[in-house]
Length: 107
Image 1: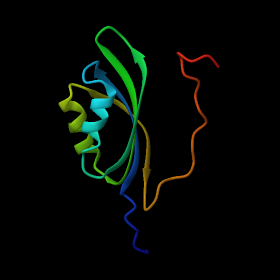
Image 2 (image 1 turned 180 degrees about the vertical axis):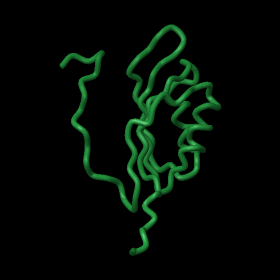
Image 3 (image 1 turned 120 degrees about the vertical axis):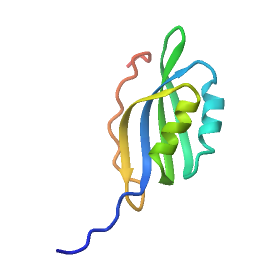
């Protein structure tokens, strides 16, 4: 049986995160971007309630460590609700899911 290549290097993570209002997503993103391996980070708020907001966090990098990222998120009093997408391998995946209508934005 031929040896398998190690394609376990994480290049992209899309996370659903519940966080307190403070820090805001600007400060949250700046601190998150300091984690090892992160090249780009995109954060969008898509639900807000009295004490928290739910954000979609898209992280691109050359060698992402999910556990380090999760721990960094938890340092802000936030929690990862789900891992919504992941790309593993030597380069970013080019396939994109069709956009899902935003509940607060008219179609």
